[in-house]
Image 1 (tube, rainbow, N blue to C red):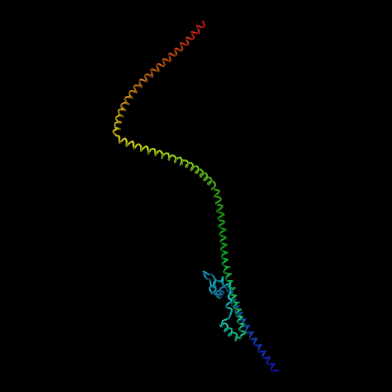
Image 2: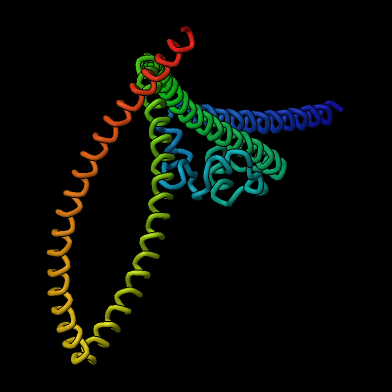
Length: 305
């Protein structure tokens, strides 16, 4: 009985040692993974090392991209968990050589722990990528804000300059009001002058029509003169005859003029004689009136006696 009891105690002690060994290996494995995660966290806490560790690059045409060439604005929103399904053979070999031989339970536990560590690491990378994207976007927004503030300052200066120019333009407008009134008066005068010129143009047009009519009449007259000239040229003999008759007429006219002069002299003499006779007649009439008055006086005297 004592031997069987001692055997059972020995078996229980061996089982306890085995369980303690398994727990110790698991604790060491977990400590190793935690150390790995701490190291990874320290590396990712440094910006340039985080960029190198995560394979982040700055491209001119795409901005920040990950190690697969995917823009961080896309890859940081999606966490790929497909790589957590099964650890590779090198990982198992490294763990086995570091912590001794592993049984099936240890392998299952280590596999699950490795998946969790890989998931945490990838989540950390995703968070770091998001932080980097957020910092990049924040820097861009800061630049935009700075540019916006500079633009606001520039617009403010432009508005102030425009206000000054507006005041100058108002003063200029007030100063040019008289000039505008004078120009308005000049425009009205020009309108009146234009109206008068239009009336003159209408009169000139009427005069032009009249001149055209006169020109047509003159043209007709010239045509008739040409016809007369042709007629005269065709009747040259008749013209010579008329010329001789004209000479005779001139001689006769000269004779008539001399006779006219003689007649005028005679008429002048008769007029002078007429004037003399008129004066004599007036004298006789005056004597007759005087004699008539004398007769009336004598008749009155005779009637009184």
